[in-house]
Image 1 (cartoon, rainbow, N blue to C red):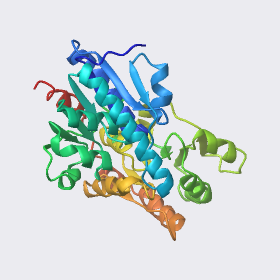
Image 2: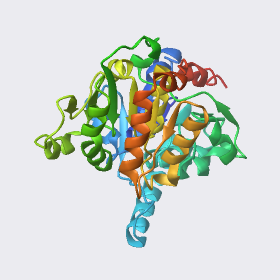
Image 3: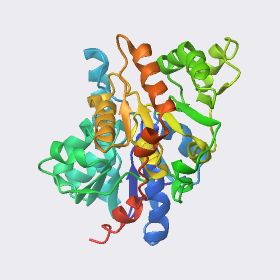
Length: 355
């Protein structure tokens, strides 16, 4: 498809689902809000957008770029060169076909488009889902028309930017009222999420402690999303009859609504969906995530009184067993962490697009 960026609204962001899915939510709403501006996605071939966009109806440009944080000096230099080449290409294109505006949701996939907009003085907006902004956001934030924040805590990290708290856009299936946690009845469900790709440390811990948890709490079952690769490794291992494993959960909103307690990584999109649903959660932040953003997300979630955090490390499984067991035994404690919050972030963001 031949792309024409003239007067288009460019949506950029990706690498991971935490950046990509908010971008999709914003694009879907913008299509109805500003129909006079065609929407074009810009992202990375190697990110989640490289797998998802070709099968979609969205016009898109996928660039040969990759992240460079945590790489060896040699590979980091290569990644920086690829980023520079992509940036030059976009600047040359946009000098001839100037977009109307750019919206970036972070991740390395958004770097060329945001930096090109910054250089060419094209109006651009940023949505930062995480409590700890990533490198791309920190580089581009100070000249953005507005930086929309998924978590209040990020504002202190962006002192020169025009920031506004809006929350993080969620999938359309979460834009509804969820059954109150107090309405749930036995058998209660502990929903375990390691991310769609799975998380080996969480999976191993659950297989280690699940039998003990379920023996202590006969009114509970465990629904455990393992990830497709991990499912092959775990499916034949012995487990309790009330420990149900599945590679992937399609209707996530429905399963979260049924859950009395959720165990999860601390990605921004997941945290935002759990806020909407008002489900108590035990968060296990991914160690060494970029800028340690998952730990900062989890800390913010705990400070809001919505859950608790357990970190991987020495004594991880023992602490996890203790924290889960106490919450499973104490309905009042679980309900005190249930604080549903309607998500209006898409409307909040797009209300700024008239400039």
